[in-house]
Image (cartoon, rainbow over all chains, first blue to last red; front, side, top):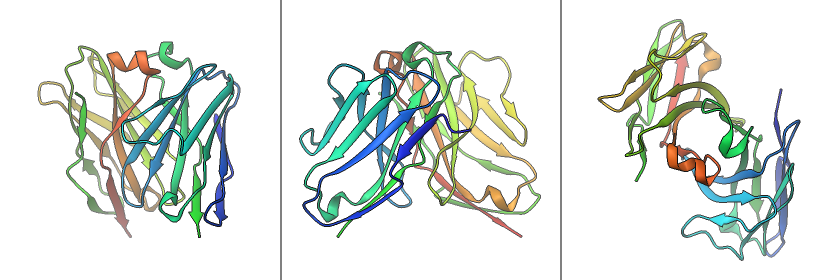
Length: 120
Length: 118
């Protein structure tokens, strides 16, 4: 069964709207979660590493003020796309790893089912 | 720097036949892990198989096996007895030793789109 839950699965909204996406770890505590963005037929691009109780670490080229990340609890991280525009339309997906950085080496990242964001 | 390369944008295979998806990597980390994920058109990422850099044997999971050649820095995925449901994007990913300081983040390849023909 799913170990990471992501909500909502699909969002369609008007330009200028802020959109919040939730990522929850089920049955385990995730001190670290990851947020990816994916365009059609392309690879996953890591946007940021979300750290519980501290600031997120953003990858180069990702606008911190545009993509706000909050990791307020050990089981929940949120990504807010602020003042979204059509170019922000994409597939956003989160992941977490049981045990975080100190889990077993063969422990994979578990992914949510993703959120398809469409900005009109 | 770490890098994962998948040189096959698309592959076709006949149902019930085996297919090999290529993956090469580059890292200076002494210890690392290699992962394969499947992404159907619905979007979810499904973990398939893992290979550790110090594992003596090639990993196998059901119809999936990993042809790990450390000297060549390749970690090809072999799918035996292909099924129609195997049609999807397949991603190779790596987690290096020093990524543990970053929560164990993964570096992904470009992906290969596999189509299984009936």
